[in-house]
Figure 1 (cartoon, rainbow, N blue to C red):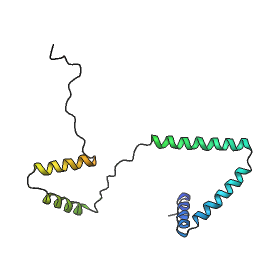
Figure 2: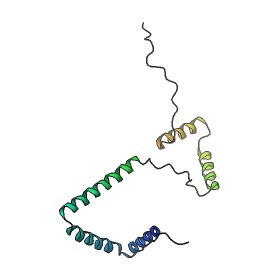
Figure 3: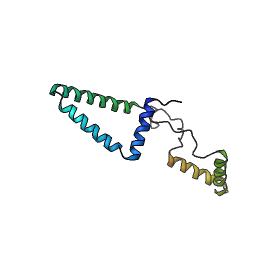
Figure 4: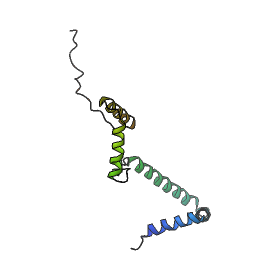
Length: 132
């Protein structure tokens, strides 16, 4: 299947980076832009800077609004058999008393930030004082 223009450009940049020509290309681009900016009038240069600043601000705002990436559902294990083997090793090596491994697993989950504890029902704060 044919490559899109973006894919072609990305592939071209990767090839240039691999051969070391990418830095030369960037340097030439900087020189070209510097010459173009030197030829601009002060008013045009001001509008260019203002447009650049608004674009940067817009991009920064977009980054702040972007929700954090979702946790990947892809397993770190190659397949189910490897995951099962790891689970079996873990369960076999844990203590025979069920309360101790449960506590260890809960502590590990807390440290990793996986476990979210459910809050028990709270009483309303406007209850009468028992001293009355």
